[in-house]
Length: 298
Image 1 (cartoon, rainbow, N blue to C red):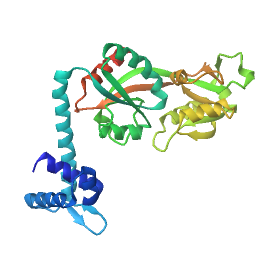
Image 2 (cartoon, one colour; image 1 turned 180 degrees about the horizontal axis):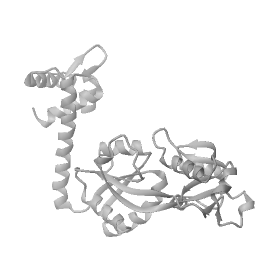
Image 3 (cartoon, rainbow, N blue to C red; image 1 turned 90 degrees about the vertical axis):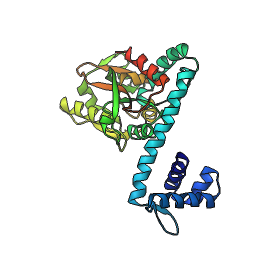
Image 4 (cartoon, one colour; image 1 turned 60 degrees about the horizontal axis):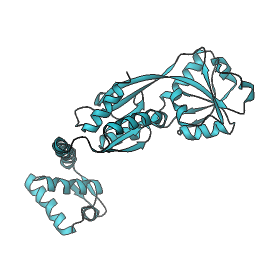
């Protein structure tokens, strides 16, 4: 069995049909079927249970799929590592970020590009669950996110570099003119506010922090909207729908002409931030140098 056959097997396992796998691999179906039969004969096991519509992995096939994915990933990363010895720091650095941390990237990218102009960037945005999946698939190398990282995989799989914590602030519509002269606010004043909070089906940490801080000050927050998008929340605030409590750094990504930011005088709760990557996986030299830039923030 060789790497080519493993790639063929993985394509069939992922597509569930030889026909679709052959199309994806840009080869004819009969040779691909012969390769699969040859693999099963060589191993002495059935890799798939066959029915009219779809191929289903047997226990042996599921184990081979898991091992093959790991082997091929290790092979690809070895090739990248060897090539980087000659080519130096260049290529595409793929980074994922939650939208509330996007504001941390522009300055770092600007400075990084001055030092390494042959590196380009690919940036993906999503919640913790999505970004964790992208890390596992190696579609991205690094993630900038609020902590704890609420991905499906176990936290011990990640290396985490903590970054400076981020204080929470209140964001209100500029149309609330009774606060025009204010620069700060007390937590208990939020009890009368219609609040919007950031929450998805899988990531709830920031929502819970806000709710718990309100309860600590003796009131239940009046939450009128839970939303998965920072941009939508800011748009709703701009229209006067309500207010929110966000990490202060979020505000640098949005204009303050239609919303107003108020410090919270009697609360000192912070949002923890970090840059994450997979342990025991090869990191490109560009990723390593990018992490070093964030280490200087500590």
